Amino acid sequence: MKNKITLLISTFFAVSVLASPSQLDQTKLQNLNWQNVNLSQQQVTDITSNQVKHFISSIAGFDSAVIGYKIPANQGTIKVNLSSLVVDNDHIFVPNMLVLDANFNPSVTYPASTFKLAEARGLDEPQLTAQLSLTPTANQDYLYLLIYTTKQDLEKTTTITHPAKLYAKAKGNQPPAINDLQVKHTNSGKIKIEIDGVQTSQFIGLNGPLFEAKQPQATVVGKQQKATSKRTQKVEGSRTVRINATT
Image (cartoon, rainbow, N blue to C red; front, side, top):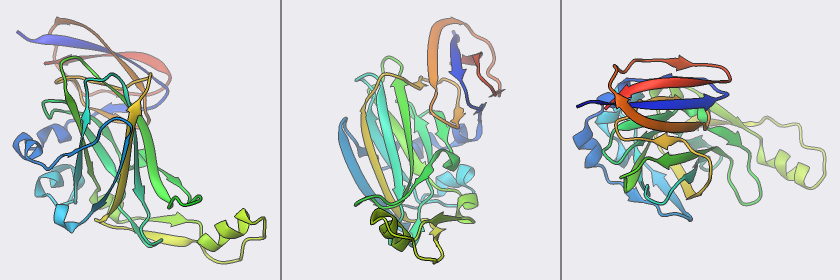
């Protein structure tokens, strides 16, 4: 018997339901080398051409390098800080993130536009960074975060402030009249992840609908009712939207 999961989504941002990630090969997802990340743990990992996977090409547009994280789903709401670091002021891996539930069903996508540039500060490199909140529904031990880049991302560059300008500003001096740096987008780089507990949430259900999350948003899962068909929807503006999904 099919059950209907009713979701109430309160958001100030645009959200769209996508279908393509659900076509990924679940066997290949399950066999990926998922890295364990525990609460209150920070992890920095190189991503290289050795991690290129063909199965991701259906959503990336080419054989992107990927990295997968396995995070606890039985300890309440978690906050995920994910950053891609600029390497040697020269290149960066532009991240996209697909969140999968405990059964490796795609649940939420965070496209490259979610990740915002943070300039170098202190010992921190310039980086593309995003913070999101996830609340797993019941009966899940782990969630999975799949990080990849896209063919479209590789065609662009990112401008970062020249280090000499930042140094001058930090000293209270006039920045030199030099060009900023154009950082290449590449299929390799360095990813930093840190997770912790939070209060607000993006629910990750089992066999729920797939969302593209432009920004973190709160999602509430309601009671199960009689099944209706799943459909693609796009939500815009500040309002509450009810989405019915089958399981």
